[in-house]
Image 1 (cartoon, rainbow, N blue to C red):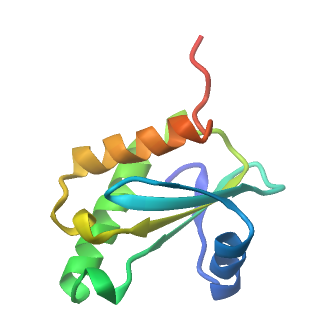
Image 2: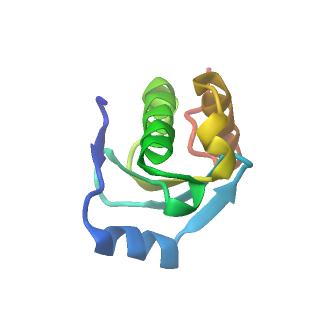
Length: 114
């Protein structure tokens, strides 16, 4: 991903859960807040509630690919955590992309066209 780095530290995830805005769809929940950088930071999580390791990894791969496709249209300077929900396991990648785009439109994270 060109304008995004990964969030790896637990304290960053916890900070976003506590003090950020959130949007929810049936496939994912997204927590976001502004950072002071010129790039986005992305974290993807999937709990054991959604299934075993194979299902969790599939959900994370689908979310990562959907984010990669929407990344050029996003504003820069945000911390974003995407949490997979139960329905994400059986979702197609295009459904995930549509779900992320809905959230990004509602949260005004998309760049304005024109």
